[in-house]
Length: 454
Image 1 (cartoon, rainbow, N blue to C red):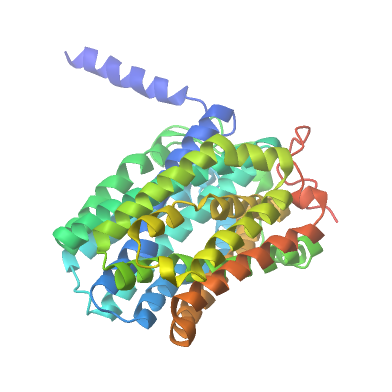
Image 2 (cartoon, rainbow, N blue to C red):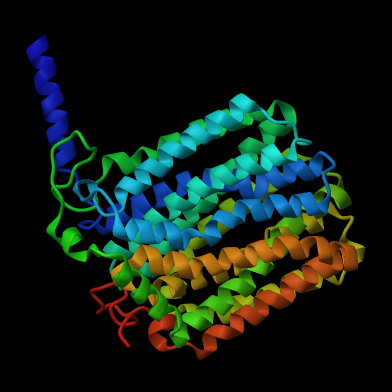
């Protein structure tokens, strides 16, 4: 029996060693990207949606709700610092990005467990905001590692489709995070909610341990394998090249236009998404579970749309055209509701309005592809994180502006401003180059080799 068991373990290890890697298989990139973004979506659903809704439902002010959203967003504004560390230091035997990815996921598991053990009341705002900040920080590290791995290993011709699949995975995870966590928050305890999220997150996150970036690398530090020569050659050996390449890339015209888009859209996002939660609580009297269930359904709807159509539209027509059309469609949908207070007491109209969120999703997918295209491929983690950090800056500004708009004009001001901002953001790609925002070129072998040359 001992010998048979030994053979079985050896056979299993050999089988794992022969699994395709992220660099080798297009189907694996689609599957693994979707699965890992599913894992990332669970904590994002908690910190960006469930916790602010929980605070709103427990009589916390709009300013506190906005501060919670800002606390969740703040670490994402500092992702460039993590990206620089990631470009400079790593354990290459496990891959250029995977060591950071696996470490962040372990930290998220510990953070959820700590939240469950401490079990803070909604009135303990400092503690709640601190735990929110911790979980969001670890999730941001995971995001930087995963995005850098995608930029490193994905051909440009696949970028739109892969982003569509990954974004759908994240939406499904956010939907699960909002619905499951909201249910446990409303009908059980905050501890039960965090333990449920720990379990949901850990299952898809295991995929990061099972798949290598490139052939021959280690799965874990104590397993067989060695560093890839390609990863070794790509890794900068000093800080100065990382900083100079990333900063020079930031002042290119295409990058500046994308940055302006990201900041503007970030402000819109907080006003729109947190405004939805406040509206449902104040105007309709909904609880956390009601809001979480609707948002979960909406995320599933737009996630399926991303899988079936969103990524194909962006690859075929280019993110510039998709951003323009989706931005002005969102202006009509969101602005129309803001100007019709007679509809505000109707639950069916509100539900239908929320479920018309596909234009906003298409806009998000468009700017994500543009941000990846204008990143500097040599230092992808630093460059992409620095660009995307401006989106988080906009979200933080939106958290402050939410309270101001609420006092100034209520939901008309909140949603009206959000509608105008997304339309303005949709205009900016008109001045970008074709390489940054045009249709995908199937001939491209490198992800960003064209747009990183001056």
